[in-house]
Image (cartoon, rainbow, N blue to C red):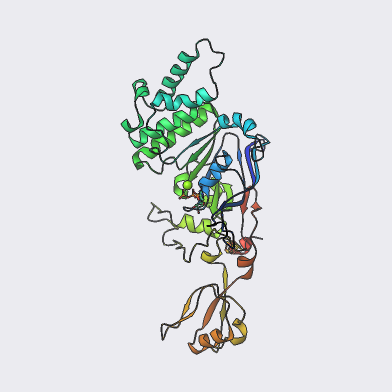
Length: 397
Ligand SMILES: Nc1ncnc2c1ncn2[C@@H]1O[C@H](COP(=O)(O)OP(=O)(O)OP(=O)(O)O)[C@@H](O)[C@H]1O
Ligand code: SF4
Ligand SMILES: [Mg+2]
């Protein structure tokens, strides 16, 4: 690993909360913790993939970094300058340095503007050709050059977005981002809405531009297979928290976090003889609510390591279970009656019902998983994970 790498972006304890309280007089505020204290950095010239299921806060992270959303807390260090606290006026030059490409090439381009106007907007706002002999001509030439570099034609310049296919629109979005010579591009699921045949073309194009211009990318996707080839390093998010960060190779070869393991196991394996075949981990349990979340690991309700099992040799549970919390819903196998719900404290009466129903073992929650939020810590060189039992789960010393 190159020790001289310099981070272009450092995100420190970043939070973005949305107030979802209804009505002025609602008793308790409902705070949706979309991004809740995440940490990661992106080195100059690399691609950092950000993955996680829908609603985990990926887009909110991207939008907060470019200050489309005002951060609730934390730091966004870009080349050492904290964008989180900077004034709108001082933010202006960074609006050029950081660009975004959006998922939906239909919604993200103004249908009433020609391609020239769309691409020229940033050039005009940032006065890119100020001081140039003939700024108007220089701008038009730049637009033609950009169109050709993204695989479109000069004659497309005077057309409107509705005259293009999805893939072509995404190319216009890329040309728009490149027009102001940015340093960092936040690509928010730029290929998810495109046909599979077009996806590779767009990814290859982004990679070519990266090499040519030394660009840095934050590449957001909801599944790991999509970011595997494009990313140097990857961050895995779950419900507003960062669960694991490591190099792409290390993450695929030795995922450490139970959530990453589950995500990876759900990627179809093309090789029928592969060892991974048959080891698919199906995530069970409900996703916890991001509104006023309780302390504890955000993944606890679905983690297969978040419980221990209490077994009974003679079918009696009273002492060993009372006061503990059930990890899963328990139904009486004989009557079909619900004995207890997940997450509920086991009372003496419930323990008696379990004994009567002749359960041999009962899963109870591991307290730390539900009471204490794990920090993202370095487990091995440049490989970070947030889990109380990471060493035990991975047989690490
Ligand atoms: N402007 C907003 N106002 C209120 N809540 C929001 C806003 N934007 C996002 N959220 C909420 O924040 C959470 C994270 O949303 P976000 O769009 O960042 O997720 P995502 O990981 O990008 O999901 P997807 O893969 O579906 O794009 C969700 O619960 C969402 O409903
Ligand atoms: S802290 Fe507990 S619930 Fe969270 S990933 Fe680790 S074992 Fe699972
Ligand atoms: Mg999103």
